[in-house]
Length: 491
Ligand code: AMP
Ligand code: MG
Image 1 (tube, protein in one colour):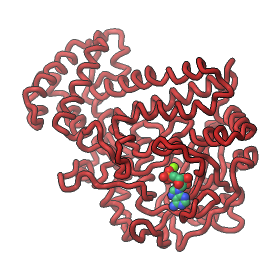
Image 2 (image 1 turned 90 degrees about the vertical axis):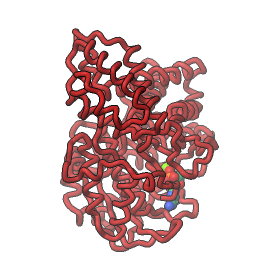
Image 3 (image 1 turned 120 degrees about the vertical axis):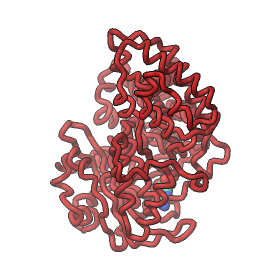
Image 4 (image 1 turned 30 degrees about the vertical axis):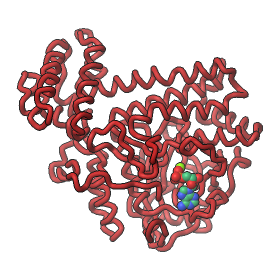
């Protein structure tokens, strides 16, 4: 699969040529074989040695045209024009066997003109966290960047303390962020902004380019994909933590993992980022912040679209979000799209909304474990279907309220003429989610050269609906003493 350099050559004025800066004793500890073969990359990256050669040797194919991209971003609501790839490099693009364009990117590659005096490195801790998160989200069918390979090193990297440096090769449809458009718009570099639009239409939004109003179609498409992605975050209890506009992808994929968390206890206003004192990026703020970010992006369209057109595009966000959220949540109770569209189905949407909302409310009132509760519901499904609700309800503090809810659920399952099976629920409610306390354990061991827990975690979160009885311990929620691990932006 030949590597192309479309961004580097067609948008050379919007980026800077920078080569990866080698780290001490690099070692490829993990290759994502499934992704590599899906992308047809076995020829380019056949083994660990070839990956290091391609990145760091003078004739290496992955370093000859690598670039750092320029962008800006609204960080915690404040415009910052001084961003860009400070430690990541776009190595090039490939066309997949399916004809899609995919970026290869190296994170932790060393300093660039946009490093702002920082070291250009990433630590092993955050590299492991990004690797696991992207693969876990992908396995839950949530759009995300992907992890292709993890490179560990002996390079000492200074954060709050001295840590081990590492690198990640990741893939994305592109690394173009909301902040790319915002930067060239606010810098009054309208020719460059036009080049960026043309590039997107030519390579990434070819359908939108054919539309009667391509700019409206593009902005609408970004609003829709962002709404659908955030709906899935909310349904699967994922708190991104740093939804700055430089961390928002124009493809509506989860991107730039920092202090993210999957919820343990269901606390709607949970804040995973210890630097987010105001709770701007709290779990339950994510949908409205998504819209705020799209609004910031829309400014960059203001020479292309009139106010009504911009409003029209932004107005798609809320209905798309709500519809996608309902679809995800109903399916977690077994009311999948297949069940709901079956001709014999009689369930009405209002009953499902009240079923879902009440369950969530009960979890929130007693801070019950979010994923554990859904998994136990799935395991108890056959009993609940027959009206035997005690086994499921017994572990909740609000026993009577949960009994009432379960009776309502039994009635709905009965009245829905389409057949709901336990498998429908077990296939939507993961046994394994990427819990911080397990990840912490994996990181501590990996820092001492032992990747066994990392590999075990990777195995379970990439097949999260399977039993994996030998690795059952990795499904367990944290004890109180292991809850609330502080996660800062330091990475
Ligand atoms: P992030 O918090 O990772 O989204 O990064 C925000 C901005 O800071 C981006 O422009 C990054 O490239 C840059 N950045 C983060 N960490 C480093 C680092 N260690 N060295 C250089 N630039 C960095
Ligand atoms: Mg970022």
